[in-house]
Length: 118
Image (cartoon, rainbow, N blue to C red; front, side, top):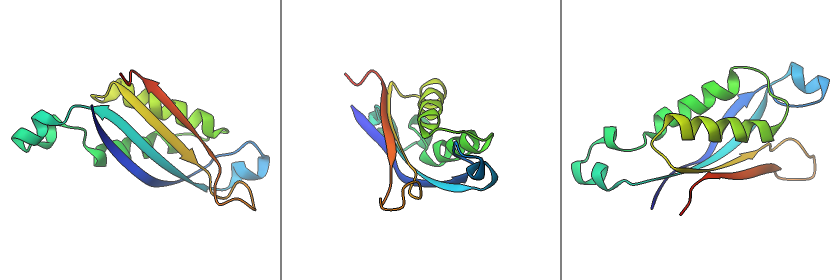
């Protein structure tokens, strides 16, 4: 199994449960891992045969910025579902961090795994 990954994708969006959070944008940092098979793409040196991380990053940003979301758990689930439905991957790991959520912490967040990692 091969992994295509994106680390620390930074997205500024409206996120939060408190009323004051719903009036500002906050930064999320997102890590993605997508399980796939890159052998054919590598053999033919053809991006059309692999997962294009630029396209993935754009789609994730569009998804997260489309409407306000309260929970980073919701963000993670939405991303995982979209990746599994729209890209040639059979398993994903999504980590969503909210660096400004807790004053004395570098970051807080959630990490989920979905799909078949076997």
